[in-house]
Length: 307
Image (cartoon, one colour):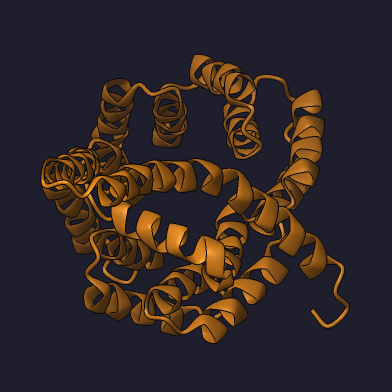
């Protein structure tokens, strides 16, 4: 018999970010009714949050074996295929969810995420706009717009959507993270830090909140600050454009070094040659230093009684 009370408790835990507790509760439901499709689908969702991809895939397949008409199952499977770097399969699964429910906003937003990975900005915006027509007040859609424009470096447009979202739900972790990213981009370090701390307090396991906190601390560090600014700027470019920038920098340094050497400025030529190597080394050591800084700052933050 289906245990509705335990099932509802599991959902409550999930919404609060208590994924492990949700998993244990939904397992209790499945112990009573092993054939319940929705419970298998929900367990798959929880396992996906825990990055247990193959376990999640197994559970969602069990759900589909019981019921093939629930769009949510295809969305979960699409997320799994996205993580497995199978974007074509993921898009097909989203389309199957939309066939079952043409107004499934979650499927449209997931398609937007997949097209973001594929660097197809036109289709990203088309998906978000289509979702906005269906549910204009959906906060997830406002956040999708905000992140899209933030990634494109269009901070004014991103801020418009972030403000709209945070007015709708000031306590939302995702809204505070987006606003924190914008404040950091705009140079308001203090406000960005306040927003990051608030988001972590609301959900200590939020990867995006922890990343924002780390970015802020990296930005404040004189040595890593330049590395962060460079990587932040490069992240707004497509993979092709970023590659062109790096190749152009390499060619510029080498060409300048060769010209200076031909003109007899051997020492200066060596300076630019070594300058390029320093930039490469700086980029190479930046990431491990970034991670070290993250761990240091998080340990201080989590055990600081003031927060």
